[in-house]
Length: 361
Ligand SMILES: Nc1ncnc2c1ncn2[C@@H]1O[C@H](COP(=O)(O)OS(=O)(=O)O)[C@@H](OP(=O)(O)O)[C@H]1O
Ligand SMILES: [Mg+2]
Ligand SMILES: [Mg+2]
Ligand SMILES: [Mg+2]
Image (tube, rainbow, N blue to C red; front, side):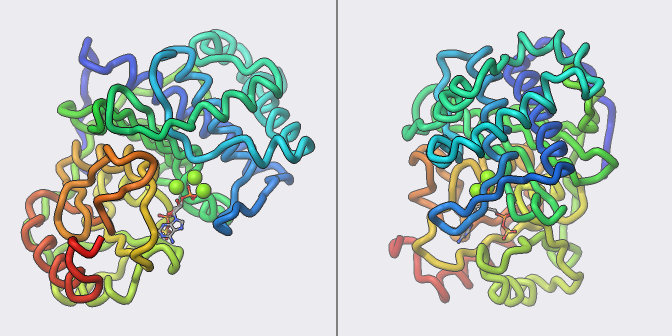
């Protein structure tokens, strides 16, 4: 990892970055508390994917911070309160988890929390929590300021003690302008918090258990490789989310022989920004699946500001203007700028051969 210390001064989107970092850090503290408790409250959603107390609680906490500081902004969030309104017992467990992890005196964090809780927003009761969770129902991502939140990305990874991320991005007229990724199981003990503002680079800090503190940032840049055969892939763990056989074919085309790093969630983007790997490939297992914008907003900016690019599998820019899901993109490839031509050429050829051209979308 290449790091240099940066200094802070008044910059565009400074407040957005700071509030987003603190909000993600607070949600990370909650997620760790849920992981360490016996009750995870896991439910299966209609698409057969899991959701837990940590997903609902993190969404409520981050939205409390956004509503408190940027009340006019729109929000897109992965979760809604439907499953909690029909399961009062689970709703109470989510509120209890938030209260114990964030507001209770027993955590030893109450003094720092009380000084920052006004700024980060307080959730007073269960009804307020349920209403907050539903603030993420925006469907238009293309105009004005819209936050995109994945409260727990990689819920399966979270449940098995693997990688997961709390991912928050701010779109301004459909362009990702601020991106924050909290990765509690990545890098150093306690995890890392990465953030980027468009045009200002990417920084990393340790995630702390102190609600009001952001440790000093260090600048991060992707590994400056210039030859594809020097690259390591970062791939998903879940075989159903990405076509790993095709990825092997692409590896051969690029001369890549090193074993892939396998992580759940947007921790893959973080791994690239931190120099643990160089190429992230996500080829669709089904052309019917539309990628969610909250699975890529924060991560794509974190990588781009560290010297990379994020495209679809046809080598075109990710278009975040199409609502809650990508309608004009299939598959995602991420790499350092220096090798983008070679990677795009090889992936595009395979994509056209296997899935058909872009006109088939
Ligand atoms: N079929 C299919 N194809 C592609 N993606 C899917 C699919 N089904 C689910 N999802 C989304 O994958 C998100 C988790 O992605 P991961 O990066 O952790 O998966 S993987 O490890 O790379 O396979 C996961 O995010 P979370 O629900 O936040 O965990 C889903 O939004
Ligand atoms: Mg999910
Ligand atoms: Mg996700
Ligand atoms: Mg999620």
